[in-house]
Image 1 (cartoon, helix red, strand yellow):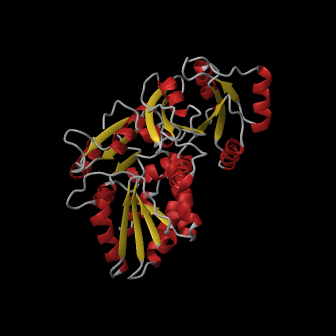
Image 2 (cartoon, helix red, strand yellow):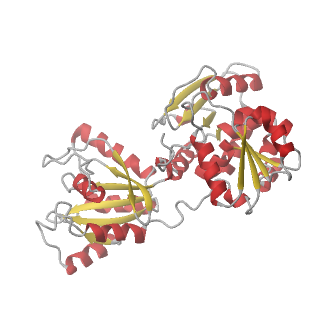
Image 3 (tube, one colour):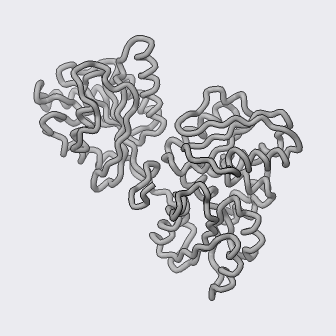
Length: 410
């Protein structure tokens, strides 16, 4: 991954919905000023969601998602529609494309209602005004029927595209990216020591994504980042003229970092910081207590949001299962999913252990947490689970006293 590019998980996700041949793909090409989506007069050309990273100033980095028509028909068409609507779980905003000549139908009204339930920002985009002019009265009627902002464009000629971009800027959900990784825990001038083992799964010469993003967040908040491997942590702290405000470690080095970090210095992990940054740390901490209730023979799902090259002692497939078997004192039945896959049979599991989610956005991570909770299954992430299995979860939550209190009260 090129680190001077904003990761997809940090970008505002804008999903394009509409009926077949409404001009969704053409609209994406117009917004990006590139021919990145296949355009055809044949209805149903787009069958799977298509993602395109781009910049819309002053919003900044976004991901545009093209989807299949919401009016697709037949058994395969219904599957495409279902797959398209899955995009709503990760979207921050929806552009609903309406063919100016076809007008409004129940498909658009139903989608707007679905977005309203999910509290998603929606802009209705009346397309093809080069073929069917749209009056001010028409626009007002659309707004009254849908109760969402409306703009008119021609994806072919480019008319109205700048107005649409301004509409995206005006109506983008406020605060969608306000959460910091660590900056709110720091004051300018604070020192943070980052314990960074050399990850064998990372390409040579690079750090892994959460480490890079955490360093950037520290610098953005005018604090000082000091990086050390686990073996040099004690020496690094001893060499500082003042104690660091906090030590952030890779979860796999928790025990070493705990031993070498003075008790009056805060300690946590990259994974725990990302549990808060991308999801719901309180729910994941509560899920750690479920580890104590596991019994030999229970099924556990290990979920990773990305696919990567697995090393010999992989954290998700080897280390965590080994530690959990030792903790439980018997065999557990593990199943693994990675990438965009997330199973429907969540009720079959006693616990879901999720990665830090650095490659997905906050909305999708929260959606996954909600799915698991709705199934009545506890969920924990790698860093929280590892800290609990090693008996140092309270120490690892030291930057978050309310969570330590929650643990003590349970």
